[in-house]
Length: 116
Image (cartoon, rainbow, N blue to C red; front, side):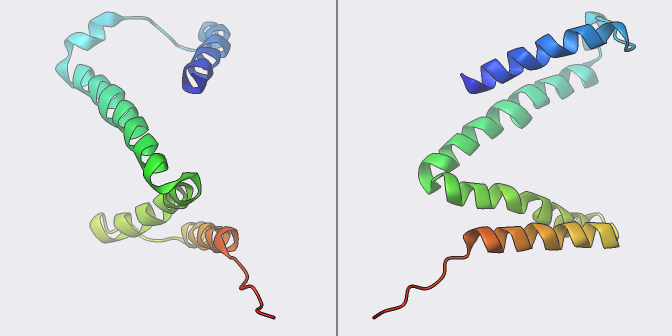
């Protein structure tokens, strides 16, 4: 319900901007199979499947543990892009990774209870 409401308000607030942008509703673009398969992938794979797997993860792990994994995605992306795509890790990317990891460690830190 929250996702549906967010989507509705997003569309509602974007409609006035269409007059100022170069927007053209042209369904003939989907005759090109590349565009059609990209939209199908984005709708089913990147959106629907991700929502389903996220909900399963939250149900199995709980919201707190699942959130740790979602915050690790940028770090994993940086590491994977460096290994697979041979992208260079810039100072800004390294700083962002360090800040992300620091935030995760701080949020997960639980002081040990003292035994009396």
